[in-house]
Length: 191
Image (cartoon, rainbow, N blue to C red):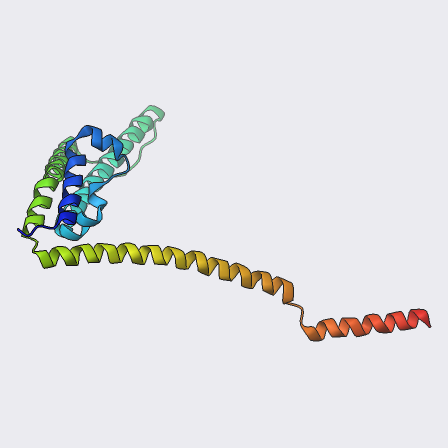
């Protein structure tokens, strides 16, 4: 394992925040999954988590729809109306709940593996890879900052051009024509 104080410091900071509840409170907006180092070192891990989250969301929404349909069905039974929508059986609902529980358990287990996977990925890096990683992160930060400056400057230019358009939209020929017309009216008025 090559040593790189900067990358080692980033890993240590992430681990400290994840392991220490007080640190977690100090970094309230800190999401380790969105941290630049994690995104670059563990893309497969993040993709796996995203897939599990999508599956969890899908199962939760199916259960919510089923619960809503069941509530509507109970309300219809009270009013005497019937709906021909296909309902899930109790066994299917239990299966969905069991699947949801398994997905949540797997998701929590994968989230707990973050520190181990991050440290393993760090250990596999050579000195050159550490340098490239740091340069890549710095380049992304610099590009993002420059894009923010560019957007602000672009807005200022657009505002200036719009102001100029409002101010100078009347052409010189139109102004001279109005001036000539005003001269003629004044001449006629004084004559």
